[in-house]
Image (cartoon, rainbow, N blue to C red; front, side, top):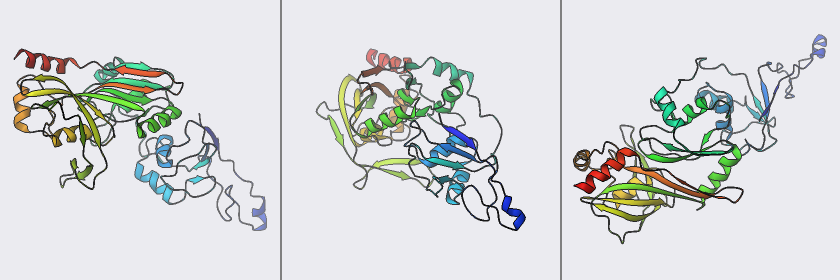
Length: 343
């Protein structure tokens, strides 16, 4: 993909006459770069990626704080000039990557055998540029915050020959269902553009507390992220928040609960969960936004986690083909519905 060239030492023929050597960057007095310095020519697949994100891929094992530091200090150059972390790389850009000592040389944490088996059996669709999996509940989509290996890290180890695997979007850890993973940068850019508009239809199934009114088909309420003193991230409806809209349709009434279909028209963090709460019908099994007494009541029906499932995706591929993908409701959630229906 990328073409990587080692720095070549510049002859210092002038040194004998007392002249200072000149580096390849043309800076007088600088020492010639180490052979470990790399020049990378950005190709079409990597064009559009932020500089910091690209460096994190190139410098695997180097902490992000170190990556930002070498950018700030000007050790990283784009077309022989300083750049900022948020610069979007362009095709043909020449990226200078300095030699950086790796934080550690240990192999990345291997995903548990159970996770590998789950992911290998969860592929719903795959071609040369895109993979869609039926993400199991309980798996984080990426590592961090005490999680050593998420779905994307595991997929990269399971598919070592796929060098460009990137999450197209995210699902909460407890949410199951359709998750898109791009295998090429060109597909990642294309799908991000579709997500910015209305090019991708995403349908979720959610079991909410109470009787959802059939006439309530749209929740239009701005959402704002907040961080509590404990460090927990919460989202709330607030007038100063970002525009957020979700369509709803009643699928089935089951005693004190309603199975609804939710279609997010915008892509905010925890959007469906907070819009359900705002409508007065929190999603059952939601320990962050739901009521403890409701969750305790439905544990009696076997509900042990958030009842939110990304059931369907529909969008147009770059070649014009309409792709429709469905993820069946997991067995644990089907059993809850069956028990409610028999009650």
